[in-house]
Picture 1: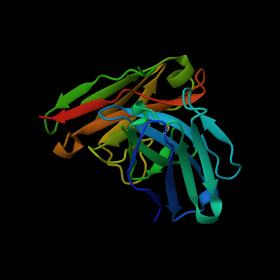
Picture 2: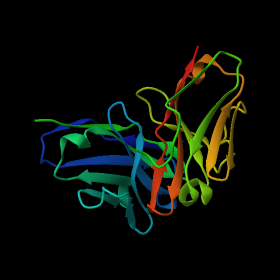
Picture 3: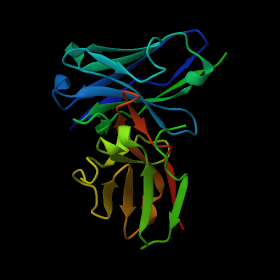
Length: 119
Length: 110
């Protein structure tokens, strides 16, 4: 069965970096894109962007290009989200989600990784 | 503030029919297909409706979606207590070149 397993919660200081992983299983990794969605505490969902798992091409939502970087290790079917220069308002749960054709059609989701930025 | 407008809350009693709206513009809902997600507290969202009105396998037919012009709607008929959750619409926006979610609607089953 399809599964997306994300890395554990992280507590970081402002200015630090964090790398969240999303390991896929149960399907051909390069057949579907991987998207990232953020949810700040008590807030709604926000699309961060997408990485094409076959070509590595990335698309970022406005406000996320630069400090947010998507990467892949196709040998272990894993996608990564790295955030540098962490700020307090980066505190959120970050979900990976499998892109099922349409740009906002996500048929499988990871369980979410909580990133807390606090001094 | 999202470019897609949803009511922050909705409610109904068991057995009732409830509708949740999602209002956008030509650059998003007007020209692209809408998806709907259901999210329970501290859980990942679940795809409920894709392509405006198609239910993925396993989603009960009590859930239905529709789109007209620059608005979309999610209808839940025969409301169950376990339908109490947050609901989000999502669509691609051609002007922003990004996916966008509505602000979410918290459904309460009274």
